[in-house]
Length: 134
Image (cartoon, rainbow, N blue to C red; front, side):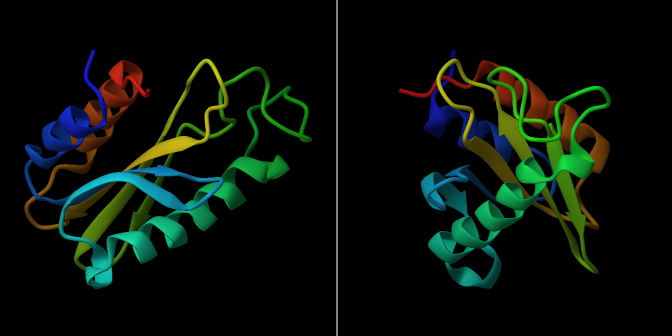
């Protein structure tokens, strides 16, 4: 089972990958990062994407049907992933379910012209399932 560094290197092998990171959405800190970061600052990117992750996970409107809108059921975040698009790139945030607190996500910055959004989403989900934190 791969750790953070191995998962990030695997993410960077995806076509069009510009940068990847593992972020704790509670603290906003990057637990690891490779490649480029939007704006050139990996820590600022981690903090900003963590804010998006917090908003999504705390939103009752985005909770699965039948769940208590007050919070996630069990240890799984109520949102699996977020996809943000802009003129030249995609940002994929995939939440990692863990046995302790599930406050981590993978962030992939993908070139829109060279990347394959569907493939990246599938591979990021697989990476999140295999990721070992510790």
